[in-house]
Length: 352
Image (cartoon, rainbow, N blue to C red):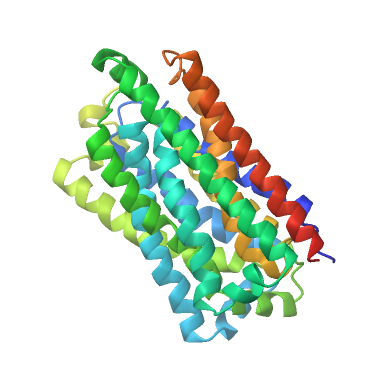
């Protein structure tokens, strides 16, 4: 099947929508501590969903993984563990900065590192980004993405600077700019390791294709490994918090969770966790359509997340007290991000 980068852009938009939406069900969870609902949803994100969809969409999943070299299995897990640090602090960023500003800082850093480091590491930067027309389009698209992220983050900073402490608390109950910005920087750098994990698992995609898996789905076995690494990191941290806070009883409706709707909480966490996984499910589909410029998928993914994350920010009225000029600024940033996805998709179509 000939790659179609424009279809790939659409898949990345779906992935961005999934990622930007995952935290919404968590907001409705009642009387569960963060570590309880994060780990509950995470079991769907990092374990159940990856293995379920890989088992039904790929051929000979266990055989493919069994034929891979040890290092090809190990490194996606290691990078997944590092990505796990970014993932668990990503949730904290949303708590401290809100959807709009938090995503702007985290994903800006994540875009730069996750897109450019893989081709630099493989010695392909000059060949794929400097030496041809498609590479030039990709560079322009990356620059537009970074500009769009800066504009969105700047609008978020202007919005927050103009709010009273009471208004900040109403928009984001646990708002703390100083704490949130440091958490966001750490989360952005660590989150880019997911891209490195996918790059390290490229040989597994070839094995899956040789086993008869269609091109849209060859990335799913790699997701099982990277996600498992993320599970290890998050499970250890959540376990520490559960012991420290003595919150395990909340799963059974005890302690602070007395009267909590346990079945509904579990359903909300399952939806949130599966939505978190689907961002990468669609990501691998989009990447499969980018041809030899698959590394550009990371920029498309990040841009799409911010586009839909900003829309959710408006839906939750995080911007209701912002001045009209600030709202215009943030929508200008979103427009730049949409333009960036189109530029990269068009540029990649020239290289097919």
